[in-house]
Length: 347
Image 1 (cartoon, rainbow, N blue to C red):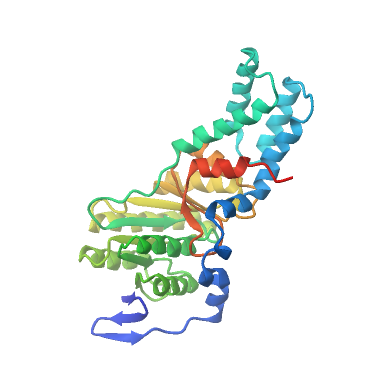
Image 2 (image 1 turned 120 degrees about the horizontal axis):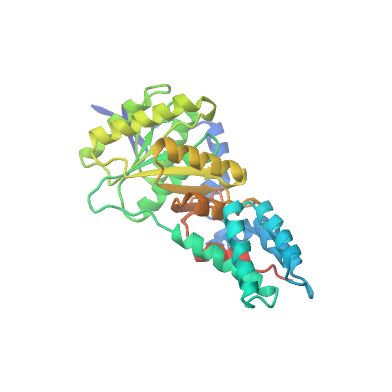
């Protein structure tokens, strides 16, 4: 086992000089990683900017349907249904909203088309608030987090940004490189650990991931960290083997540290839309996911998947990511998200 602490590789009995990182890793992280938040803009403004494509697909299309003296009837509801489905909010939310509008029309509460917009907004906020939940920290450390998801969703980068957030709160953080099938993942975590001042537990590439978790737990039990975050592999094309491997890691976690992991976070790529929902169902059933991190919301037209995940799966949305900067991972705020989604474009 090697333990890396803020710039040095420490082995039992001595300290090594940290190795240089490859140009590939530096290129992968990009300049925004080193610069932090984009041009110092406020997070809400960047969230609005990131949701621009989703806003145009969803709320702008809804506005177009309601232009002029549009009669509120079944034809309008059918067009609205198609718009909502096309915006990736999902059939369950769409059905609930259309039925709610029909009831309002029967009760003569829906006399102006603009009220449809308000009904949709209120419906989204109601659902998202039920799934708005920060990552609670237990009174008795260590807080143990296992991060799962398919390759390409941004797991390793998310872990680095989470570690940064916890370090900013004054917590001692340990990151665990248990994705041993990708040497680049280990190297990325090594970069992150130095950047944010976290402890890194790692072994050589292709080592048994469960052995890395075992080492991390022994170190954590010795009181070396308040937060332990474990990176895992995500080779979806070998689903059965992947899930068995994750289950084994989870078993060893719990055996060596009762109650661990306290959180199993699934990282989803918002740009994949419906596929993200499929992945969430799969990991929830097989592993027991306790929360969602939704990445790559910036620039996607599929941001409506947030509503679908909340409505159909009921999983807490812990964090959202809207950029590559180190500050661009934030706890999910339902009101902030809906405000950014429904704010009308400047004329």
